Length: 312
Image 1 (spheres, rainbow, N blue to C red):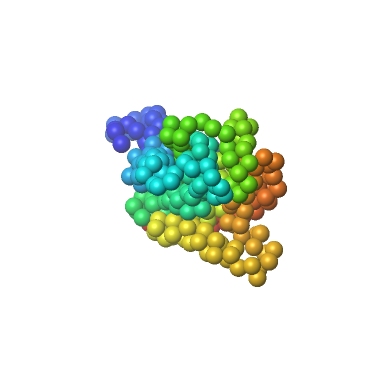
Image 2 (image 1 turned 60 degrees about the horizontal axis):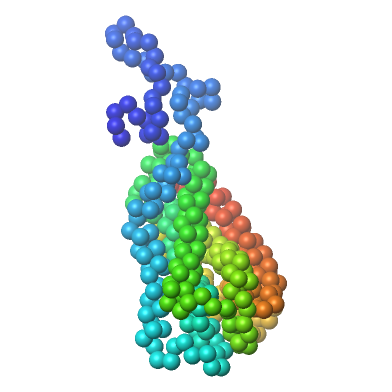
């Protein structure tokens, strides 16, 4: 911080008149008791927080992995025996080499349930716990940044990077698949029916949006754990653990309809949107479950952080 700047980056208020001994008197406080020139809305700007997070090594690693994965899969299919055959294809993997959209759908199907969950948990679980781990959290609050504003700014930035992560993977997969396998109509797994690529492309955009919404539960739990612990690894691991446990429980048929309330039960409902006659019923239920859980978890996170004694 250079001379003449305040902690928040704003210029200091004008000094009071000099005293008889030549000293400068401190300016009187504002009507609300805060220092003159201080405005809570100017603390921790989104641009500053976004740049700070962009410079983190884990941000570079996550986006590097997500952008490289489609090309790795392209090489794997090119090297694999029998790739590209059209006979009796029934699985998503069988159809992956039949066009850019098919390849993008395959990439999303194998990565949404775990890889994207890890990326979202990493961005949201490192928000507050990372500051506490670096012993900089109490200095941010002493700036002073209001607690609610601190959480809001960090959550917005974390969700921004999470959105970018969820979008960049299928976008790169679509580009890689089109360059490697061409632009063809989409074949539906199981039935082998063909749907025009021009009809599927808008639906695929909806699919990507749904995958993002389905990751809100992971983001919200990671955020809650981040304000509850000083360990970023614990926050990320707890959110990923939720995905693993939920996936295991949804395989227990004895739970019956209770499985529909599990966070991951509707995670693959987006495949119905790519059928010749799209069905969005499962996606609507998935959105309702995901948004309900995430709103509750985020509300608890804000409430807990307001009452937490910050010692890190």
